[in-house]
Amino acid sequence: MSLPGAEEMRAALAATWPAAEEHAVGPFRLRRSPGGGQRVTAGRALPGAEGLAEALPRAVAQMQAWGQAPVFQILPDTPGLDALLEGEGYAIKDPSILYAAPLAAFAGIDAPRLSAFAHWPPLAVQEEIWSLGGIGRDRLAVMSRTAGPHVSLLARDGDRPAGTAFAAVHGQVAMIHAIEIRPELRRRGNGARLMARAAEWAGEQGAAFLALAVTEGNAGARALYAGLGMEPVLRYHYRVLP
Image (cartoon, rainbow, N blue to C red):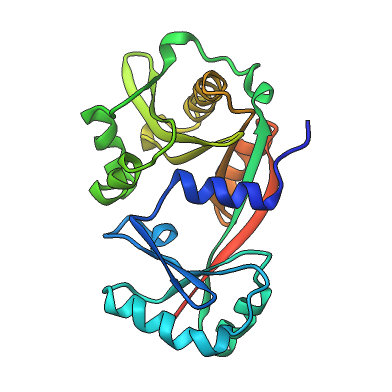
């Protein structure tokens, strides 16, 4: 089964972790959100768009008027924006990789039924675990405004809540976000069990693939996802003012 293409993955990433609003400023599409991280506040350029240099000051001014720092997401189909921002002194931040695999890749994970649960809304203990990783109310608000099928996932290690994540479906793709495992319960298979339960839930929603984004520097997570049979399908990064 062929993995989704870059455009399908980009659309799934945006739809499953949505900004509160999107606005057009010439060839730019700007995201506005009260917190929630750079993924929901970053601007992007339309593929192949012209007039970027002329429109950039207006895009920056709009972000600043919203009280947001100027930040742009750079995808492979917008190399012109990357070069423009580099020339304007914007630095690269958080080079990231989208990994994906067919749902069948997760079928062999040892995940007893009572070791991971899928439900909505999240429980208070999940919010506590997320808070350990800096995932607060603003990101919980992003989860709640997701339009398509979405769910929270809870892993248990024996009788202890061990980890949590959020998953949502767009088209064929179920995207996982906000994976967080209690520090003392890492490297015990809890992340893999979350992935297995997410894949099972995704199949129930009619999805065919499971995907997620991870920063290039997170070697441990990348090794886990590669070990589960996931493959890189899209790379992107951000540009910010130092």
